[in-house]
Image (cartoon, rainbow, N blue to C red; front, side, top):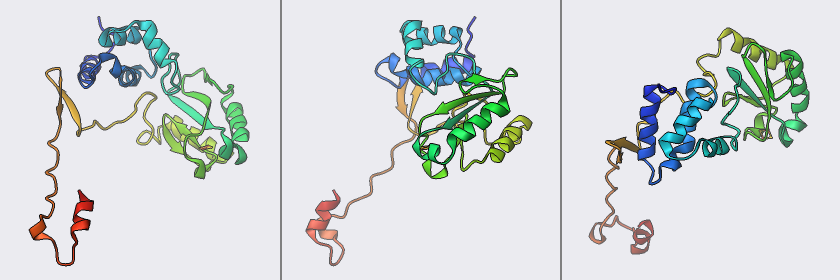
Length: 217
Ligand code: FES
């Protein structure tokens, strides 16, 4: 019996159809599987390997390279606190220490109730809101120790369920444009827009030069 849900298996095959080589769909499929369990379980890794035609070791080798893919269980909320330069200068290590004390865990581990994983992160590209962090990929910035506590409380009480989905959910909206798979083949989901007609030499606007028209092509 399949560990991955029917929907995920079907979406995985659709992804494979979008690429010339099935193994090119490996990382997107890992994200799909992680969305089901919150991390990549060994059973999921075996099934992904079957779908893309590689060995489970290759799937594990690829997944373990990327921070966003977890090959061990993580909490419902993964708190990735940036300690890179801008955040460090704004008190990121003090905030991290506060987080460790509050959650009673060391960075890199998970609370016993499975709610929170706390980890150090490299720059998450939100330097102007330092010190900042991500919870399951969603941004929170300019945080004091007090803000951090409020954030934890809100997550615990479900006050942020609309903003922060459980770990593994990359996106709650399905893509509806671009390539789609149909009968195992990639097709264009939407016809491309009609090209904007370019003015012909005899329809140049008054004052428009031939050079400008050429520049537009
Ligand atoms: S240094 Fe923290 S977001 Fe860039």
